[in-house]
Amino acid sequence: MSEQGATPLVWYFDFVSPYSYLQFEAYPELVASAELRPVLFAGLLNHWGGKGPAEVPAKRLQTYRYTYWIAGQHGIAMTYPPAHPFNPIPALRLAVALDSEFAAVKTIFEFIWKEGRSLADEWPALAAHLGFTAAAADAMIAESRVKEALAANGRAAIARGVYGVPTFDTCKELFWGLDATDMLLDYLEHPDVFEDAEMQRIAHLPVGAARKT
Image (cartoon, rainbow, N blue to C red):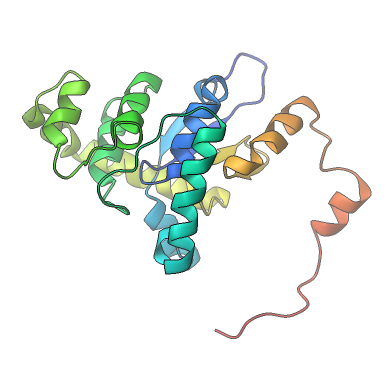
């Protein structure tokens, strides 16, 4: 959690997101200062009517290439899992069951994105990494309180206006995506960054045209 007196931070993430992994690895102290909240990215997309990068064929390839390239730029080890997108729900529920502790989240992220391993095919190995048997992990993620807590995270994210992952929430402003991290850091140091005249104007910019739906 954030230090006493500091801006409270919440970090919304999904293990299916390579950008979530990259932000976690590139800014560990920032992530560690926040309350970690796993959310189902697909649930956000369903609510807002969007598509994930991997659901647009041309964007899928660009996303995979770019995230692997940016990992190298940051010196982050990255190996894509055998298939992507994959079903992240068991891992999300496992994180929730483990109170979204930083070390547990790190283990899960690195199992998928550093070691490049499959949740579907290597669940017992992930459980072992965390100190459990597969049967124990299965029992943990089957608990109704765990399922409800993950669903509650999603509802809270949507109520705040979160539409993608990763997203930092300062409880006043939202910062979506790896490339918004520098803007978040600037905001934390200079909370008035959005108060100049042009920032105020674009916050209320009218829509000039809209696509037909």
